[in-house]
Image (cartoon, rainbow, N blue to C red; front, top):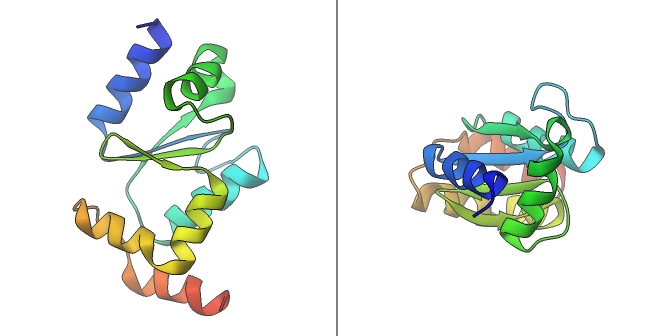
Length: 120
């Protein structure tokens, strides 16, 4: 395994929820990363953010690791969940709530409901 792949594996193993994104959760650097971080932040999810712009090895490495061509990428309990479109769909359908509940991830159910109400 490459250094980047080892680093990625260690990160997703050590943290329940990880978002590989452009920028940080406080200052996203692209609209797609901003949308996913915004959902997680609004729902009060405790997650680790990895700024792929800070390390070209990780930026390419995460694409190779997941076999997924775009960023952001969300991992829950070491499993790849998806990118912006998938996370948006899962949020609106309630599947993200179920995923968090099934994996013991704490989140604000009322906030999740408000997202759905605003987009209904």
